Length: 304
Image 1 (tube, rainbow, N blue to C red):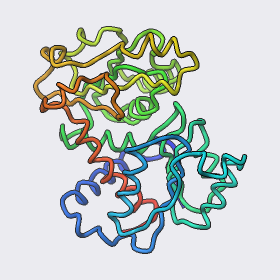
Image 2: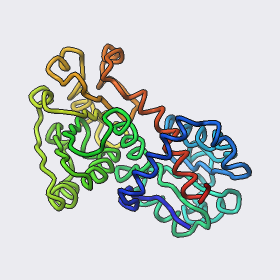
Image 3: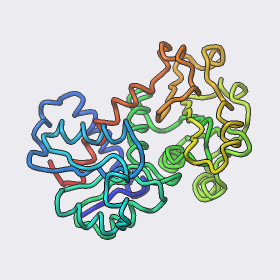
């Protein structure tokens, strides 16, 4: 039995295999309509979600399986004080695979240590979000045709952004990757990510507070929102929330084949005027999420 808690648990060969499988699902959806007949996915979401939860549910339903679960901690026994370990043991009795999102870092790892079915980390606090990373990689591969020789800019909340941390970790294993980090001082990429991922793997990177100055060099622009739920101080959030707003004017110096990504939800960090730009790929990204999660569910359930 295998879990997915951290993106680095997958080799690059396995990631490439999942991308190839997702591409085949996109091309031949009917061939996968009954791959998980009789299987049940449990979605345990202790934190609000739209795309991730519905994407997992849609993925399992498209594979012919069924879904059960909850969408907030208040509607589970966690509200009564039940531990993550006990929840995992209990839900394992009812399902074949679990997708868990939790506000506390490490909670899905704890669940995987006690569950008797595969556990997928669907986001744990500011730490990790491996299936969003797989979604991002599939989108980049479909748009660019490769995962190497790319200059990737990350803009916004790089301190608490678990999607940023996961994607940087994944990209660090491909060749020819350059990273550009755009954030206010208070939301810079944590030093442990810089040291343990970028510097350890000799990935060239630059840090700046000025998005427009680096725009011309980017192949990928990964925008993020400033996350109110990660702040302890409302004043700090209000001061930083509008640090970067992407507009058509700011894209004038960008490459014609720039790929703009965003893990969503969007607040106002990307103007709706950008949505009609052919370089805006964030809704394509949403679509890719379902297919890569279908491929992952099949892999962990050992379905061929």
